[in-house]
Image 1 (cartoon, helix red, strand yellow):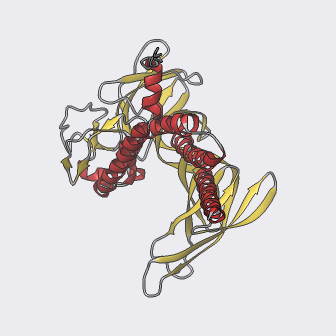
Image 2 (cartoon, rainbow, N blue to C red):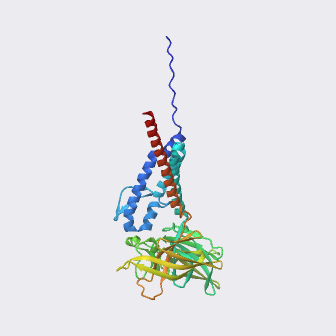
Image 3 (cartoon, one colour):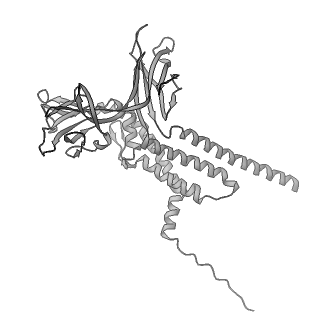
Amino acid sequence: MEISETPLAVRHPRSLPGRIFDLLSGFGLATITLLLLGQLTWFATLEQIDNGLYPTLTKYFSWKSVYLIPEINGKIIPLPLPGGYWVCAVLLVNLILGGIIRIRKGWKHVGNLVAHFGIIFMLIGGGVSHHFSERGNMAVGEGESSNVAEDYFEYVVEVAEIKDGKPEKIQVIRGRDIDDLKDARLRTFNLPDMPFDLQVTGYLENAVPVAATERAPDHEQLVADGYFLMEKPKLAVAEEAERFTAGCYARILNRDGSKGEPFLLAGASFHPFSYRFEDRVFTVDMRKRLWPMPFTLKLDRFTAAFHPGTMRPSKFVSEVTRRENGGEAKVTIQMNEPMRYEGLTFFQASYGPPGAGPGEKMYSVFEVVRNPADQWPKYSLIIVAIGMAITFLIKLGSFLGSGSRKQRHV
């Protein structure tokens, strides 16, 4: 009798690209990233109590933060963690490869696909908001108008020529171009509309100018015209970042190769630095960035209601007129009911003056947000809900169908 044997199939080892794909699309990586995000959120929640919301968000979730070490109640936790931005980026890759490409296909898995797409859409929206959103505020008095908002956080350097008492040919050096110039790092900025260039160094995120005659420099800071920049103490960093006052040192570089003396620029200064070239006058100033609105907003009337027996506001209402291209529109902005127009969102943020009496003129403060992904979180949640509903209905249909088949069999 002859016995034939079928040789076992030889299993070839997975290629390197295949192993990388398996790693990036695997459920294990998804679990690790979700656990890391939970841990980062927990540490950030604790740390923001002492350090403020914006500095903590920047430390834990900025794209510049590759890794971080938590610090709770002034004590360093010896646990290096990856930055939340990059953990979300890895999770995004994992969802695309595992939740869209690798996942089982078929009508039974349509709901899972839709839900995964909704989560991917949410992560992408977070990235768009992180890189492209702008936040500022606009304070408008009753009966007054404004068409510019002031950025909450970004300090810029403005160079202008003064003609007839007014600034002209304003050139702006953005904060992202100077905020890395710590200590002795310096950078030269070409100013084509000016007869000179500008060199900037020694940037500090939160500092005040101090007279060297009142207090000697404690870290060998550069003294310019009798003043130096003193970084605010650690306790002051717990303030919200919109209260920070940045500072730096600058120097005029003339086109003939000569250099001016270093001078100090600070957000806490009341006057800009003035420079005369022949019969022309120029100013160099550091201030929070202004960005123009595509329309003018006039505050017609502001009212506020308070909880009985307290000064806690229950409702802010601003009745405004939006003017553009010769036309007008009446709009009401109040708590939880912002004005959305031309890609901008105006929230009712606060008001003043504090403790104003009857008949006193009021002003309203609007938070202005330009965010291309403003509504994306809402849309992503709707998509996820639809995906979960589809999955539930398919499972319910399968359960009811299997029960009917069992009854017919009996």
